[in-house]
Amino acid sequence: MAKGLLVTYALWAVGGPAGLHHLYLGRDSHALLWMLTLGGGGVGWLWEFWKLPSFVAQANRTQGQRQSSGGRTPPPSLIRFVAQMMVGIYFGLVALISLSFMANFYIVGLPLAVGLGVLLVAAVGNQTSDFKNTLGAAFLTSPIFYGRPIAILPISLAASITAQKHRRYKASVGSESLSVRLYRLGLAYLAFTGPLAYSVFCNTAATLSYVAETLGSFLSWFSFFPLLGRLTESVLLLPYRIWRLLVGDPGFSSGYFQEWEKLYEFVSSFQDEKRQLAYQVLNLSEGATDEEIHGRYRELVKIWHPDHNRHRTEEAQRHFLEIQAAYEVLSQPRKLRGS
Image 1 (cartoon, helix red, strand yellow):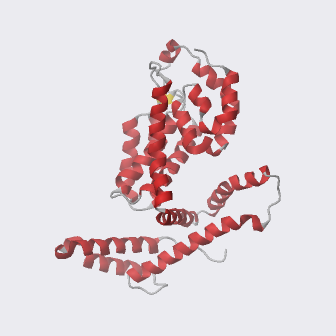
Image 2 (image 1 turned 135 degrees about the vertical axis):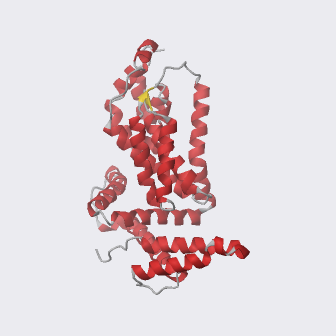
Image 3 (image 1 turned 90 degrees about the horizontal axis):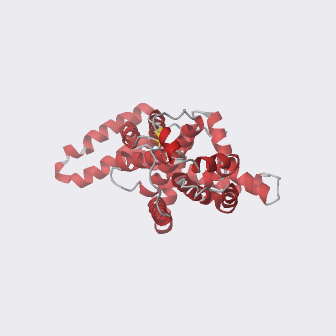
């Protein structure tokens, strides 16, 4: 049955951020992506206003035309590559907030989440990519940055490059009933939102700590790149600014950003508290030099390594992990104050 352009525009206007128009056109991967990101933060939903005619034309192609494109490789797309990077990072952040309590999270959970985010974008439209190679690149990259939230960036980059390298057109398949498609989308949506909802509603304090720790790590990393840091801040503030414009108050005084300042203060205080605890764990005074931190770390690691404490494995394991976490905190670049 041919798809109508007017119906598509109507669904785009009514339920665009939820992907209703993509569901109507049979673009299930795109619909799921919009469901999980609310239309790409609203930007992607507005941008595709001009793309809807091509989406409808693609949906109305005959099966013979789809098969004829199967032997060719799709042209490279910078937009798709950037979207893969961003969604991979987004999936990684959500996993970090909701699943980081799991054992071996940085080896299994994080690369799996980032890789699936990249693959979801790769499967938008009539294209797809190689599942095994993309996830393989994510899993091979994760041990290099083990235990660091910033690992999300290189994992997403490696998976996105691999997905672009192995891009191909989708093979034509028979049509499925709407109930089967909705069932599959529902399971995928619950798999993504379920752990996050549990963390937010049932473990709120720990979730806030994870959010603060993750945001603090990213802010510390951006201290190396001031321009990139300011750009990131502008992007994060964009939804707030748009909201102020929509409610009819275009003026922006410092009072409008109290919530944003509170967030920064919370993250800053959380990071300061972490550093104080880290100094206590390593039994160092605040302001210790990098050489003193590294020397004490090596000394304590030798003392509390589980292999050297077979008679008290649990205690040694706990101290060993605390020492590693403290060294990781004190090894991060110190933010410049007073800027």
